[in-house]
Length: 113
View 1 (tube, helix red, strand yellow):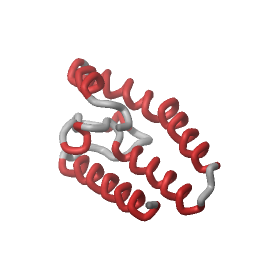
View 2 (cartoon, rainbow, N blue to C red):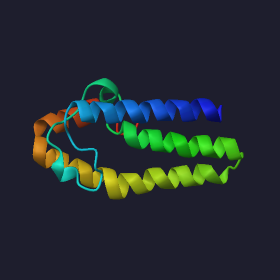
View 3 (cartoon, rainbow, N blue to C red):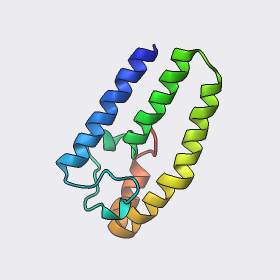
């Protein structure tokens, strides 16, 4: 099961990166102000953060592989940290940059899955 989860995480991560490259916008999470286009199609139609979702799936796959319930807490901590310190600040920048288009996207599409 861990291998399947890891494979799915890899596919989601690669496809979501490809979508950003195809739309010629930044994938740099440290500089979200460099974004020049709102990507809302493909995987982004179902998740506003498929790259982060892929990372979460890697953590869950690692937990399954190790058979360690502690990794569930690590995964929950990852979600909390990412929401607070990465996603919410990114969303503020996207709202300032794309206005009602981003607000409509927020309403229509879940943050994680």
